[in-house]
Image 1 (tube, each protein chain N blue to C red):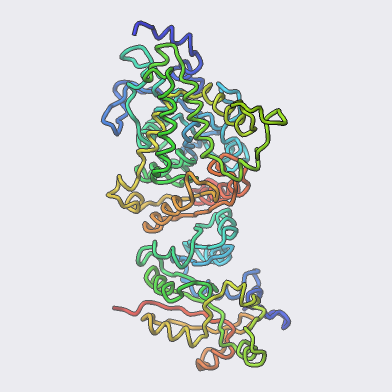
Image 2: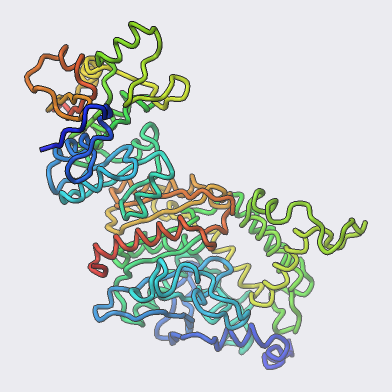
Length: 395
Length: 220
């Protein structure tokens, strides 16, 4: 293609600039420190964008790693540089919050394959000088965790006091505990599972097909060709967003109410409030998220199957673990329903692990882990206080 | 020693010792060797686990009610939401020194399976339960011809969670069938105080309002 990357940059400045030169802390790894990926590729050079909050203590024992979900990023408790909105887990993290930044050093990094500054498909491929697009290797949850271990090595942190995350973030938490048990003192896998179900893979496939059906996707080369698959990505987001909520929550929020009108227009306008809401969700999402990243990250979740990596026996993944676990699920979460969390608990019990497990009653669906759920906040606080006492961080 | 409650307080469960703890739970906690590993099945709001923690015990809990679990976890206790009937199977053999079932046996669907699992998971099992052979209960059935209700067991037959009542004698018989060895047995009066130790079984079965058994697997 004759189009230069410089031209592409003028077309979509924000996302491309954020991918290569993020407004975040940056750990850069040269050709001598490749990221070994499950697919066999050694990714180098590569970079990890991250945010930190609080202060690392002298013994480097108070670090808490937050793993973000599919469409999250490292801006967990600060104003987002692209959207200008607050952090996605502001309610959980901050001074005096359950994950207390007066007490803990909180780290959150963008996952590999993401689009907010850690190497991903929208990053510039040093081989061509253009964004990778589909030339970026396919990544897995384990690859995300490997990149995080390299960041921790870079920061000189051997052991995490805690690792926490919901949904895809919870998958990373479980992978941490299975692959690097000695580096994790306590773990909070929330609204997650040890494998992606057939139904969830199916939803992801619909989302990916929506992106790829957009003529502006151009086989993933939209930056180079100066197009943008915003309609496809927007539809993918609309579909996915429904799965994050619940029938009850949608009905309570929108019912069958009309949007700014008293009668149906007998057209395909967004007559209903719920349609208008979904369209808004879709259109704001494309401003901050890269379509190819969406393909890569959904794929990573689909491939996740922790038991399969351990002879099909989940208990083997956690054998002999000394990590303290707090597993949390939500009654109305139909994307990662409680039985998925219970399977984790049973595998941990089989290994004699110290585990707490709470199912929180809410009608807010999968997204409940991001919301102001007093029980969730109380449980996280109580669990971390207790772990902190055991670790000697809390008196 | 344990403080005696005033006579009009007929609920052993509400009788509290000097530290404010339930007398029956204090008694159970004192049966556990300090420093051991304990699983409390049906741990409620975690009161027994807290008592055990004070004795340097590494305690875990299972609780059916969501409120109970969430309260426990928020207190920092290692408690999981689960069901004694279905979730004990996920624990490996000999994982604990003691498995405790406190005032829960009568609410399980398959009490014998639960006891067998407890003896498999733990070296010792401690079981406390209300004695349906207590004279008050016998008299209620005899004179009124209706399902007994007491201060300790106040629910009507149609809304009680207790579906498998037994007497001290019945429990003894089941223990023999499961091959459990009885290490210790204590019957409590309605105020939570242990009855005279050397009384015969018929006496305990008539006057014990609840019983606490410490069991272990028979060798071989």
